[in-house]
Length: 259
Length: 349
Image (cartoon, rainbow over all chains, first blue to last red; front, side, top):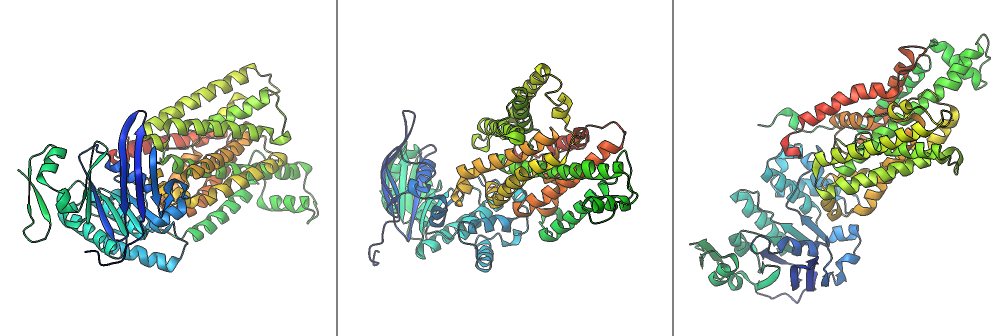
């Protein structure tokens, strides 16, 4: 698969751990994320997926070990240059005042030097990509959950960063839009972006991620391509749920079914 | 499905601002002639011209000259500044707290500033000359805002109820302290308790106007530079950080500039409530939530509101003065109630 020359590491966790009080939220996690890859973070509720994403985003600093972006400790990055390197889609996309969808998506351009023509074009383009262009003039607070999620998604796409961090981007979406979001992320990664997604749906992870990182109780339990990680034994052990893993009927990926 | 009101249309902000400023200018000039002594516009213009040495005073009486120049002009201009300050501070606090119900009066910032001013007067602090009281008011306002932010800011995710309750508590605490200081102070030291609770422009003069001007200019310029950070904060503090905003720094600047504006208003006009609540809200309905136009337009509308209310305060029952805060409270309190009641469950607790 790897015919391209080795890529520089964009994001690196080096034995990064996170503790609150005496409580271990994340164990020593070492990971490297390369440009052109899609990494899915999976695991049961409370496994530490969102904390790991927050470490990667620079929201929190590791209690031990290091988190590096382009080889530099993330905590030493200033907010604005950092916002040109990475975008973050949070789980909660509430907006406090009656901004229109277009105005919210346009905020994605704020980290960059202002260029009205280019900015406007990017905003329109990403609204079309995220399938929210029809709602451009709507007050974001009147949108349904899925529509609001797509507007937030368009906003982070408009940020045009080499690193995309997404916390359950598909949670509020219908089947079609789930696939659509994953396809867009796949496309961005082929164009060179580094994508890290927290996902609950193992089959979406199997379908679109190059690599799955499985966490439980703050520990990394498995790490590899979907076929390596998504084994019935591991899933049963980690999720305490009976499953079978079968071949997908039309795609060359594993399919997890509940038994 | 989609009602027309859901669709967002933004009018031209620059045009509205020019119209608003023109209306404000006319209102201020007209107000010069209204009061216990009613003066026709020609006399007002004559008096201003004569005072500036442009026209011969002719048959103007010294009383007419004095009323226009010494009383009404500084009073109207100070009123405009106070209204603009409170409206802008309200806009800034609403952005900081991510809550359209945040108002300097409601969340206790006004009382904090008033307490600072009263304490400085009672303790006889004069370290900064005519600036002493505004500076003390600023410190009081910053402390109150900081305390409210720490106890009920958006980072605690505690919602509207918590913000209002903490605001009430801080406000009541400051109010009690003001009452205590007023009680122990001799009459000559301190404005009446009514002044600190209801506000008044009755003592406005040129010195006050000149002292208030730099406070207003610094505070409003600082807040205007925070227009884009305020927009970003509408997404929440963490998403704003993700968009490249130095949230800690912006937060401090917002607290300081809002408190400075409130302090300037409180030091010279006492506690005038609800302007910072009503005005940004109404302006937001017209121009939208983008702070680039919301801030200056709120300033203009706030100024307009106070100039009109103060003209009424001195004219309705001459020679008595109706406390300025009565008007803003009579208008603002029902509006506040309406805002609370119309909040949908979706918008938060």
